Amino acid sequence: MKKTVFFCALLLLLSLPVSAVCSDSAKAAIVISADGGEVLYAHNEDEALPMASTTKLMTALVVLQRCRLDESVTVSANAAGTEGSSMYLREGESLSVEELLYGLLLASGNDAAIALAEHCAGDVETFVQLMNEKAAELCLNHTHYVNPNGLHAEEHFTSAADLAVLMRECLKNEDFCRISGSYTAVAAGRSLRNHNKLLKTCEGVCGGKTGYTMTAGRCLVSACERDGLRLICVTLNDRQDWKDHAALYDWAYENYACTTIEGEQGRIPLIAGSQSTIGAAVRDPVTYCLPKGAELEMKLFLEPFVFAPLAADRKIGYLCITAGDASEKIPLYPAE
Image (tube, rainbow, N blue to C red; front, top):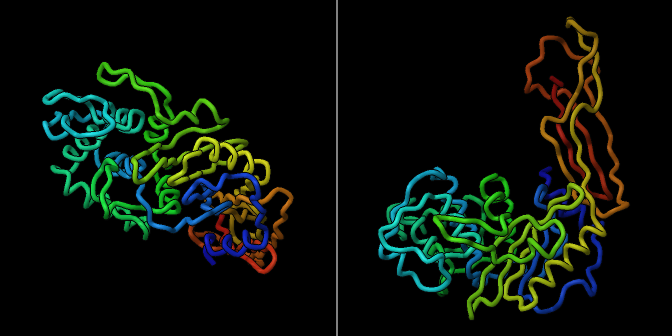
């Protein structure tokens, strides 16, 4: 059983009320675990809505996966003349991809978005195709892009749940985390300040992206880490987004904690080996986000013995995790 399916059932059993935590001003909202993807809170999370400059999360992700940070970009007249929020690029000047990413994620530069798109794909239209291809790859089923900056268009939309999944993917990139988590920076002689004031006002917030248009309203994606638990919060069309993100994080950290299962879980007799037993271990750490006080029942199932030599990918047992009627099996492999 896949972990995501397991936790749909698990959190249904263990879910906590969110009364009086978040205002009713958000058109859509969601809070998830950044590591496991478990949904802690959701409201209209699958409704397709305009997302303004939170679009730039996808712009940054596509660029980071296709370009080196030190590549030089020459600003076109098209990029320099882009309307809306800007890092004030000038036609003909050259900046690095990294400098433009700072302008994109801190100053929310629409001009930086166009310059990066043209550099990465040759033209904006081709870059937007890459954005939509990435959305399909990530199974963002309520998302469609028309531009790389978030200026309003009828066919430009996403959902709170899709933005949370996108932010999870962005957080896997160390350069994204470093850039989006910077409150100030200097790029090509420009002093930039991050529009995301939660970096200074909310404990543990370490990145994200703001957005606003008259149609989309205030949009905000943020990531936060406290006591080893990373969470992502998304609100769309929320006039009290700063307050709501802070309140949701306080509620979540008060009520949830992470449990990680990793390393050796038991030992098995080893026949014809240089040692008498071999460890049975979890290959990759598995992290669960659970309500505090919730207990998982864990049962270990191992082969009675194994013969040497053992292939590294040989399954030699599993750990069965159960909560109520929900269960999951984690395979175990020879410990190194």
